[in-house]
Length: 308
Image (tube, rainbow, N blue to C red; front, side, top):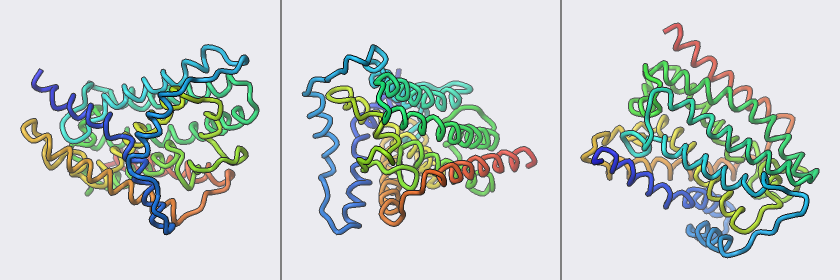
């Protein structure tokens, strides 16, 4: 029980702090635009407001539309249990857990696409089609990057990948760069998608959740915040080794590791806000080129590990 207590505390801490990361990105963008911006607690206000409302369901939707947001959130919570955030291991840690980790996000995306298609809306169907196409390009980059890092670490546990990232190994920076592109694509960030747009013809993720409201929309937004935190932890854990818990991997110093990991995530949130303030969204025809480049970097990282 004592060995799992720090992991449980870190898990609960992430559940509480997750809405702060997208708020930090938005605050950075507001400062760059010369605006004050929403408070950092705005995400909590929005979730509380949505949970207090009732959901409205169209007569054309069925149980798939109603179950999609809750099951998607459950997949994100399971992935968070595998994430070794702040040092040590996650609540769930076993050989090959990185494959379950990757496919839980595939399941989350699949449920969102099904719920969008269940509405019968042509706009949501368009967004689901784009999501399916882009996910087919991001998943190879994610799996190959994780495989290259596993080869470098010599283990198939996600905790081993982030416990000692070997930045001197040329394959690790390549895999980290690929994961950063995956981080932007999976979380619908610029230059892949604009999370703040409301023009259906250009939206990808947002157009798939147009018909959701009330608690269902709260589940989707909270799941998106968890997803941003989880993928951000992967990237921060590789670019800043201390963010993965290198500073304090021991069970007797969990607080220092968690604080260092939070600092790495905060830095990544600011950098993401700066990137979105200084770049424009790519044309849809150019997005596959960016995602294929991430797969190419992951494949090159894997080749370097195989010949090393």
